[in-house]
Length: 253
Ligand code: PEP
Image (cartoon, rainbow, N blue to C red; front, side, top):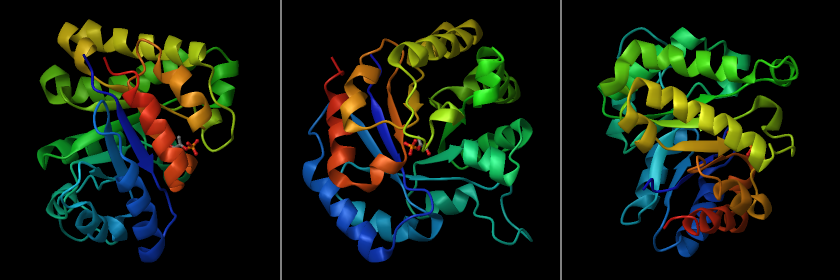
C-alpha cells in the first residue's frame, strides 16, 4: 500500500512571521496517521522552517535544486546545502520552472541526479499545457517528461522518487482536472513506470496537483492511482491545507 503524501508548495510567498503562524496552525491540526505531510517554503526560509518543524512529523522540501554541486554558480542552491539544512525532498521540474525559467527535460533530469546524489528525494513534476491537451498530446507529453528522467537514471536510480502530475492549465487557475481526467493520466504514468519495473509501478507515489482544495480533495484522492496532492494556493491557509491532509488520510487503508 502506498502511504498518501500531501505537499504544500508555498511558491514565492511568506515571511518569517507569516510562516511561523501558518506552521503553528498546520502542526496543531496534523492528522495523527494515514498521511505524510510536507511543506516547501522559499529557499531562504528552509532553515528557520526546519527549526519550527523539529519534533514534529512534518517533512521539509525545497522548491528547486541546482544541477551543480558547488562553485561559481551565483544564486544557486545545491542539493547538499538543502540536505544540510534539513530538507528530505525537493520539487524538480515544476511547470513554473519549466515555462518561466527554462528548465528543459534534460535540466530536470540533471537536477534529479544532483538531488539523489545528496540523498534528497526528488518530486518530479510533469504535466501538459492547455494547448497540448487540446491537441490530444497529453499522454505523449507526460510520457516524454517522465521518460527523460527514467531513461537517465534507470529503475534503481528512480526507486523511492515521487511523481507529481500537474496539468499546467489547472495550476493556480481554479480549474481542477476532473477525478476521471486525473486518474486516466495517473494510470498511464503508473503503466510507464510498471513497464520499466513492476515494483516501480506498484510503489511509486503519484501526486495530483492543480487547484486542489478541501472541497475536491477527497474525490481526487479516492482514485486508484492518485496517492495524494501537490498543493499551491490552498497550502497557504492552515485550515484548507489540513482539510486536504484529512482527505488524504481518509484514503489510507
Ligand atoms: C502548484 O503550484 O504546484 C499548484 C498545484 O498550485 P495550485 O494548487 O495553486 O493550483
